[in-house]
Length: 76
Ligand SMILES: [Zn+2]
Image (cartoon, rainbow, N blue to C red; front, side, top):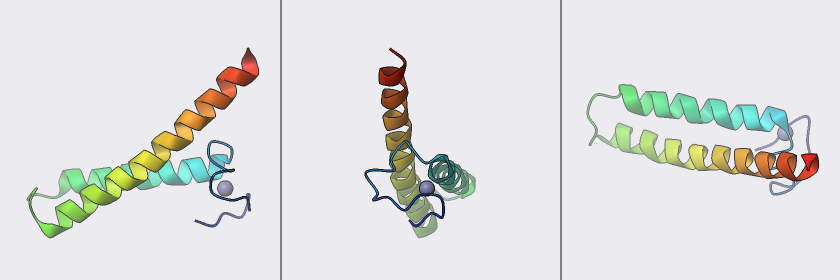
């Protein structure tokens, strides 16, 4: 994903750009909410929403983990 604040490569901006972290968090919550509110859990739409939620959630988790590690190692 391209961002106007950071033009770094994907790995370099993990946990650094707050705009990107906010975007991935928003994506995860939107996809998780859409998966939760779809009625049939076995329908194609629900499975697609679940895959999207897992992918964006893992990216968000990666952002949070790198941010946590950076902040914990900087403070001590
Ligand atoms: Zn960014």
